[in-house]
Length: 134
Image 1: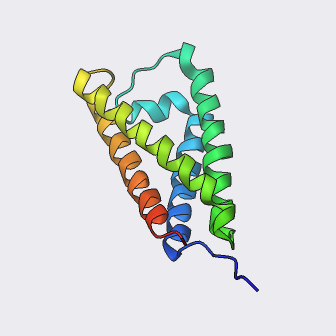
Image 2: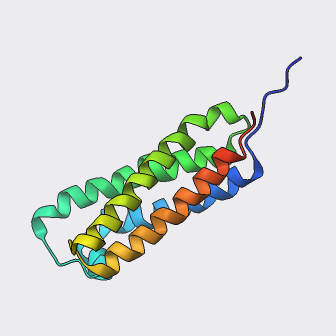
């Protein structure tokens, strides 16, 4: 009988870290988006509060919940697509914040902090992908 390949041990660490980051940022964007943004140099703009709250909801739903699911998954096939999607998403987010910093779009502090957070998550998901069962 074939054994079902389980996720590598780094997967649980990656998903746990991602769940924490997505939960914290998601809740803050959902509840106090303008205050949260001000901590990183973003100016208040009431017109963008609804999309920021929606992004917070997306982080909670697609980031935190899928990562909690990833922590508890017993088979690699259950998390394969999540890992691929997170690599794509975190790579794109890293690029966006780096390009924004280079072009001077938005506050430098926010661009640097979120580029670093995105790059760390990207590295974790890539390491998880490299360690996947083959």
